[in-house]
View 1 (cartoon, rainbow, N blue to C red):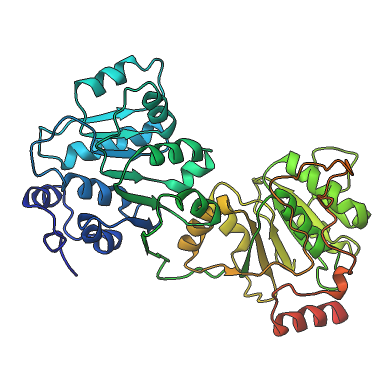
View 2 (cartoon, rainbow, N blue to C red; view 1 turned 90 degrees about the vertical axis):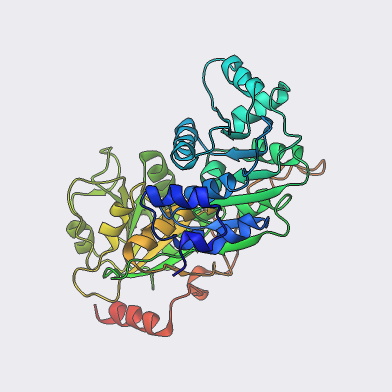
Length: 430
């Protein structure tokens, strides 16, 4: 395995990483540093904690083997103030060139102090996108000589709705090298990056636990939005031949009510809550009570529960929402009985995929991507404006789930023939 001395770093930086105890480069550093130093545009995809920040800090410092000019040559965008401070601290630990000036820009009352710091001279700027854009629009952030533009935690910034300032800053910089670091790549992020990352090399580092956990089979349904999630759940649950019983996990009461109202249109008494918050809805005190009632097919479970849930014997564990903590998800899908008939279905939008990656990393197993059923109604994110001829929306009704064809006649759920056979046998003889 190559050491840092093989990655084209200058001797000063090699001494710095050695003093900090970094003996061996991490995989993302081995795969990207020589490319970064060579001037190539890079999109690096790797889990949190795998050395992405150290990678671009080393790549940035390696450029300054001359007397800096005090004009920004590098602009680094990170999601929050805490990230700005953490990146600046890492620069301080690795940087031995005291002539380099590093300025941090983040949201704080007033902009005068940060604008003064830029005026005093800045070679590297570490900033949140919104504050960098605001100061740029005040003509206090000079981007004319920036030759390295770095976007860190890109997926996280997308979740925070920072697409506009990132794009505007990228468009305001002339020809330069672009580096993007992210936990996960998806279509929404690709759309944001495409205008300024046309010829980038994509480097991905996968990391799974060496000893996988015993979990139920997992299928991942990547859907565009909440409304399509509802349609997909309806499409599945309306098929009472296959979906005999399902636990449906949601994160909050508001989502639970929307799921209940949507399914209740056709399922009626077949749907209920686990320990409902209100007395006027159908509910079950325990999962055992749900499993014992023959007519009950869907159990809505809201948020995290203090008790350990006994989910054995429920054929489908549906994560309509992914919980914030990966440990919560894992506790639900862990296979403690050796049961190979239970299937865990996860509905995830693009913005959920970073958590999916963390779950896969922790379990040591990849979720199997599943194609969306042919009859699923996919709701567009942006509703079309009504035409003059009609004021009715062209959007399908959320919860309609599918077109005229019955769900029971279309069972393209990505289950293998063996899985379907087991489900049918269970239905006939259970």
